[in-house]
Amino acid sequence: MASFECVSLDLPDVTGIAMGKNGDVPEGSVQRRARPATWSWTSVALTGIVIVFLGTFLVLPLIVVFVEAFRQGVRVYLAAISDPEALTAIKLTLCVAVMALTINTGFGLAAAWCLGKFRFPGRQLITALIDLPISVSPVVVGLLLVLVYGRHGWLGGFLESHGLRIIFATPGIILATAFVTLPLVARELIPTMEAQGTEQEEAARLLGANGWQVFFYVTLPNIRWALLYGVVLCTARAMGEFGAVSVVSGHIRGLTTTLPLHVEILYNEYRFSAAFAVASLLTLVGLVSLVAKTFLERIAHQQRIGLKHKGA
Image (cartoon, rainbow, N blue to C red; front, side, top):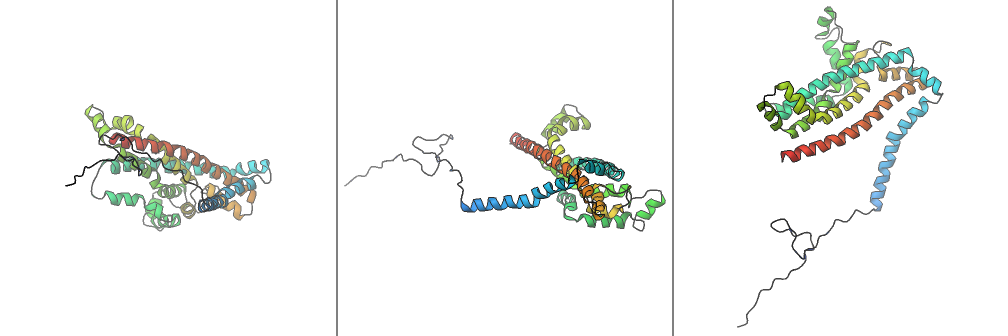
């Protein structure tokens, strides 16, 4: 009878890397490297569409703002932004932004600590409520505040009888701005605190640290970049808020007009150079916030990756 002998052939692996049990590459295997993507007519066309879209809807309006702002010269520009009403609007905008930022930073830290460190019934509901201001129109937010805190609202009459006026005053503008910007700080801190875990805090507790020491020396250093990122987003959004503030402010010139409202007033009065001059200030704030956002976003992303590796 004929006998057959099994012979194993050492053929190269053409489909990829054949890994051994210990993770080494056997002899004779071939490593295929991913080829870089080649340009095609489709990719060129899509890239061109994106560039045209961004240039038309983003870059061109920014250029127009500064061109129109300086159309009549630097003297007119400086006169527009140094006008008493403009200075009042700038001061009110900064005041509102600082107050809204303070409120949302405190709330964001508390909400992120609660949702990122603990698991409890109703956690998903609280997370959804935090995201509510994003899904509600700012104009609707303003109307709701008027219904609650207006003179004939649920709480407005009681508050005004005790000398506290909310609507058509600075407190109403702060409330509207704080409500619209409520999720920005919290949504940046929650993922970071979830990735951080509770091991470091528990270790600090065992070593005798109290609650404030744990927060300032353990938790805060790990979330500082995400916190700064949320602060930048909240500040930029607060200074540019228009819809809700327009409803609750009453457009009282020199008293309740923020920078966006002042731009609208100037434009409606056909003072285009002054309107674009004031608008350029908001544009500069947006550009600076964009640069800071990009920088902090990169650092926060690297920090999250590092926390995930530590947790693994």
